[in-house]
Amino acid sequence: MLSIRNRHLWMSAGLFALLIRVDIAQAQLTDITQTPNIENAGIVKSLQQQIGAGVGNIMTPGSSTFIMARDPARAVRRGRQLFQRKFTDAQGFGPRAGDGNGNIHANPAIGAGLIDSCAGCHGRPRGSAGFGGDVVTKPDSRDAPHLFGLGLQEMLGDEMTGELRDQRTNAINAARGSGQTVTRNLSTKGVSFGSIRAFPNGTVDTAGVRGVNADLRVRPFFAQGDTTSIREFVVGAFNDEMGLQAFDPITSKKKWEVEMKYPPLASLLSTKGGLVFVPGADGTFYALDADNGNKLWQHNNGIGHHGGVISYTAKGKQYVAVVTGWGSHVSGNYGPLFGEPFASMPTDNGQLLVFSVK
Image: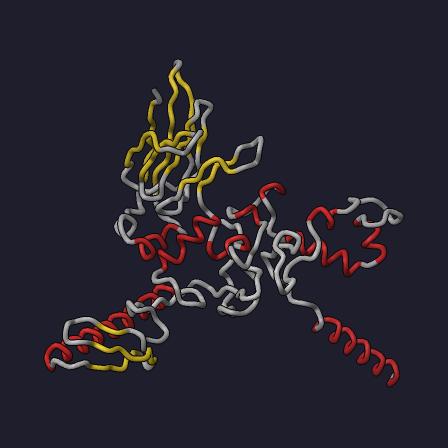
């Protein structure tokens, strides 16, 4: 009985050791055949290399059946990477920047995840700028932190900016009043930002400023501190990951692109007559030229769009119908992010509007 118990403990310990050695899986990875980088970070093989010979059999080298029989762990790793991979447009679901190919050091947007919400990438409470690789696979990547609390972060940046600029104003006033050059240390919330020199003529020397630009604007977003507000922060993400772009189905090349002032939540409609109808989040409903993206018509429907748009004919005439109505977990963040018209937009009504196409 004693030997059996000991053997059981040994087996349990071995199983525990096996479990704790399992690697942590990261999401949103490019492969290094698309984005070579100095760290060789990412999936080693291209998608086509991983597909290999397909299902095959145990006698077909490179096939999934062959790999599973020979090395099950390798098969599991390859399957996991199908979920980790950032696909290209040529593969059916690609990023907005460079189709995921190119120098990721020069253009970090190549590594940006393609997703329909910020939380799709920024969903980890443990991440911090400068570490990891869950979002942008490059040497100075990061495991993106959650977006909760960004409003407080922006407000703190505004307060610090105001205090630094007040100190600059006080230095200028002191220099004008004394007729002499005045040097003042810059500090706010316990953080030192160097010093500033003010002259009697109202000009300043910012050579001694540290940690912020000469405008004394605290930019609290991104690791390098180059973005001021949440709105500025998300513009790049919306453009790279949620923008409106048109691709030629024959050449697979981008034909035109329209930058959206606010990220749309409703679906689009393209017609045989060469129109693209876009229900905007701010209530503007407009039609674009399908050939070049130029705006041909617009109408303010008075409330945001969160549903779909359809086209139909009745008695030989074409109509376009769109649903208005605002209010959801996602759209509820538009007021804090963008202000008006979302801050005062009602969330308890909506309507179906129908337009005739001439």
